[in-house]
Length: 220
Ligand SMILES: O=C(O)COP(=O)(O)O
Ligand SMILES: [Mg+2]
Image 1: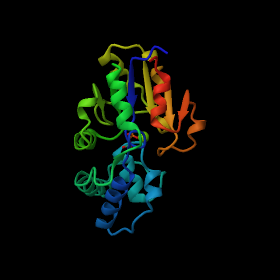
Image 2 (image 1 turned 135 degrees about the vertical axis):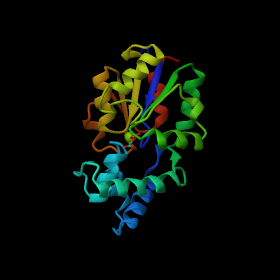
Image 3 (image 1 turned 60 degrees about the vertical axis):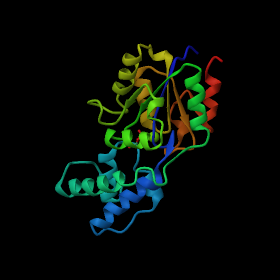
Image 4 (image 1 turned 120 degrees about the horizontal axis):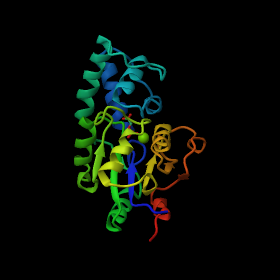
């Protein structure tokens, strides 16, 4: 491979954020007089951005869509307040992530974040975890006009870094990550420990169990 750079999904790939997301989701539901949802249920709602997460959280089902109704906006305001107040209470890097990012950086690879998480959470979260400086480009779900599965965020990374699609490896945990990679023409790797379902059936070029397996894809 002629890899020069990596684009990383955030939730379920670099960080295990589900406890803080579920806490904020259930605190928002409590504010609206609704009973809590199991953490595993909220986990299944993550991956399409905050508006989808809030719409699903409010309805208690994955099929719900964001329409910007007054009730959804109220739920978003409550979720937003709770999540911003506790972005990194329980959120942690998955094993081997920090060491592997350090190694890739030392080897001269450019590193990007391509997440559907909005910038208002992504940027402070990365700062709180002390890794903002690690990344050459950070694209949140609302940074551009389209988010994953659109190829736009990855195309923006390619343009910014001056790379061809074959030189960038998308690393994620869910369907949107593979769809975005395919649409942008970049290779993709899925981690099997994240929030995606059926990762082996999503058509990624590789599925890995541990983050450090990424080092097997580079010319050392
Ligand atoms: O906030 C989300 O919906 C998930 O974000 P991700 O793209 O980092 O998995
Ligand atoms: Mg993810």
